[in-house]
Image 1 (cartoon, rainbow, N blue to C red):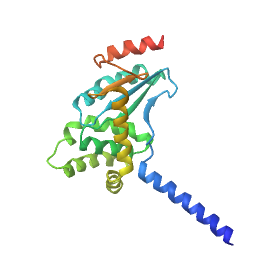
Image 2: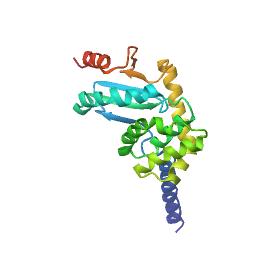
Image 3: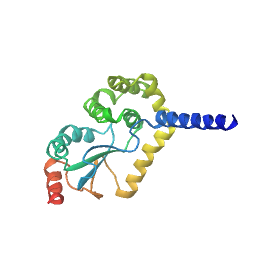
Image 4: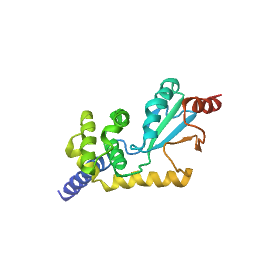
Length: 201
């Protein structure tokens, strides 16, 4: 009987840890990416959700990369958080708390509506507008509030930022890393395409 009780106790502990981990980190804490995981070309995008240049890149250049390379399984694009302020950090947390399936769509929506949500007199006002966007992706206000309070998630995002800055000497956003090398030219599709084509040859 004691053995059975101990066994059940262990099972309950495992279940609790699993549930807590899920609540704490969301479902896509490790990596958010599109494309072929084993592609010859890997592009890392370090960006901040409140950065106008990042929004411009995401709305104008990223779709071309999707069409010409990602949809043909030629490259992998990873999205890495590099928040420049508290609103950007909160947006990153919210994306990380979405499902793997909806995270990319949520990123699209946040950048698309950057001018609408990113300004406000108080952070509570900005959070409310972010919640309104995230609600469309089946994220409740309760879950989003818990997400913003998640210190482990915040540490993960900020540590990624610190690691990126140390490894690639990032001093502006967006910063593009292609196969572990910082891309120093203008971040338009033409320049990126030339670099990608060189590697794919």
